[in-house]
Image (cartoon, rainbow, N blue to C red; front, side):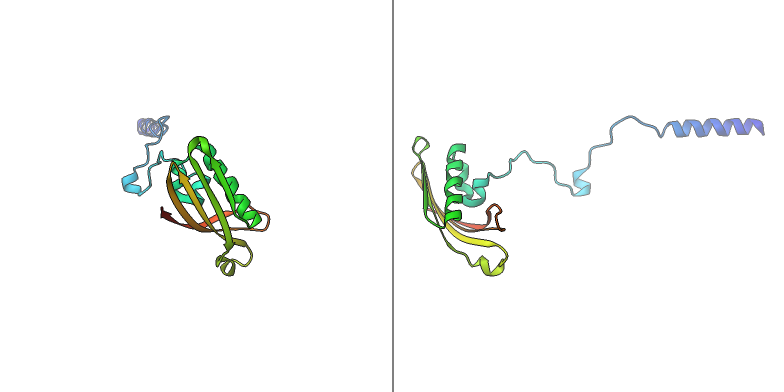
Length: 147
């Protein structure tokens, strides 16, 4: 009987020692789990949220110039312009009343129309932007027209 107890103890120790591993867990199987593999595509720039694909053709300084004009127009309620002669980028932003105000009465909303010229190619983008009191403007949808 003592022989069986020693043998049972030896088997249980060897079985349990096999449970302790130091290897890394296997990588998730995206086919089986339905998970989406990480993408190396950068998120859209803030300018792209307001003017779509036109921002992709602009350098960083031009995007910043556009955003400054966009925010000034939204804040002040008047037409603003931007111009980066060195990069061949220019345009304007006009604002007006937005129909989204009725849908979001707790937010300030404005309709905007941007005309962006990048090296002679024009785009007109219309959209709405809303913000909570004192908060940043958020693009609520855009419609691009190639010129």
